[in-house]
Length: 187
Image (cartoon, rainbow, N blue to C red):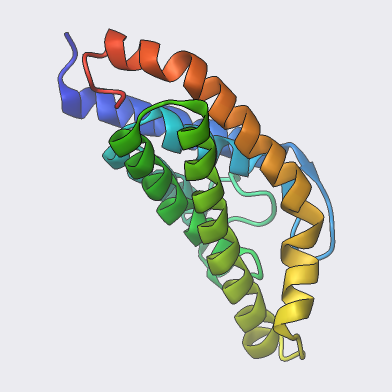
């Protein structure tokens, strides 16, 4: 049997890579592209234990900040000054929160969906705050909170809700099996 620390590192690495792949599947929109990253944030949360879910998104962010081409746009340290950086930070907290909820409440569809929606609220809160601050302070342009929501949330909401439903469905089907197979390591 693989030690817990090794298993956690492998799980975190797998979801960091899947999130990077999801970033490459994108539809360009002004300021914030539409990608599959959020799906893999949700899946890391509903399928991994909290520490692994958290580590997966920290690893994903670290890879991009180091310059590996894992983000939907530019990579490297300058990303902290981009309009999408708040969303990337939101991935970390969202994956951990989703996993914490599922760990406490189980892999039932309703629980997983509620967890994903909670994580989505975190992604949007941090993402819109980052977008608003970036445009107003870094870019030197004027943007209201309503405009930030119009650019950074409204175009993505339906797709992100569908991603949450998909992740909840997947987790409700395979999450209990993963937990049983891993003797609790998966949740």
